[in-house]
Length: 184
Image 1 (cartoon, rainbow, N blue to C red):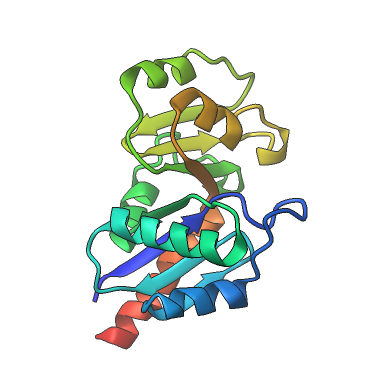
Image 2 (cartoon, rainbow, N blue to C red):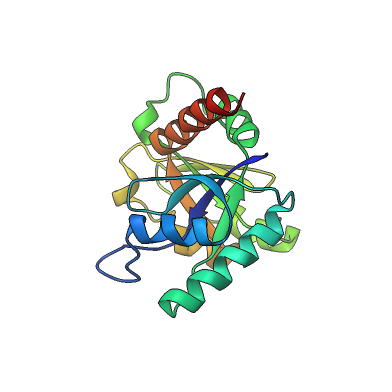
C-alpha cells in the first residue's frame, strides 16, 4: 500500500483554525487510511492508502476537514520518494545551514506568467529557486524575518502553498522509513 505525506496549510497558527492532532489522526482513520501518524502541530500526516491519486486524496481530506471543523484547509501531498528527491536537489550548496532551509510545496504547477511575477520580486538576503511544484527557500536571517512568505508565494503564483522547514521534511522521510520497515 502506498505511503503518503500530507501537509496541511495554515492550521494552529496564532490561535486560529485549531485542529488537534489526535482529532486529525482520528479523521484520517475514519477516511479508511492506515497507520496514520502525525508530527508536530502544523499538520504533517503520514499515512497509507489504497488510493493512488494524490489529487483525489487531497480533495477527500479537504472535504472531510471542512465538514468536521467548518473551514477549508488546503492539503498538499507528496510521497516519501518525492521528499527524498527534494532533499537531494537543494540548489544553494551544502554549506548552507539546515536551519535556514525550507521548501514551499505547491498544490499544482503555476502558470509561467505567475512564475515571472515571483521571479521579479527582490529580496534583500533571501533566495528562492523554483523547481516543479516546489520552491526551495534559503532564509539566512530566519523564516520569521523574511518578506518571502507563504502568503506572498500564493498571491504571486495563484496556487495553494505550504512551507515546511528542513527538519520537518527530514523527519517525515525518517518516519516513512519506519513505515517501510514495518510493512515489509
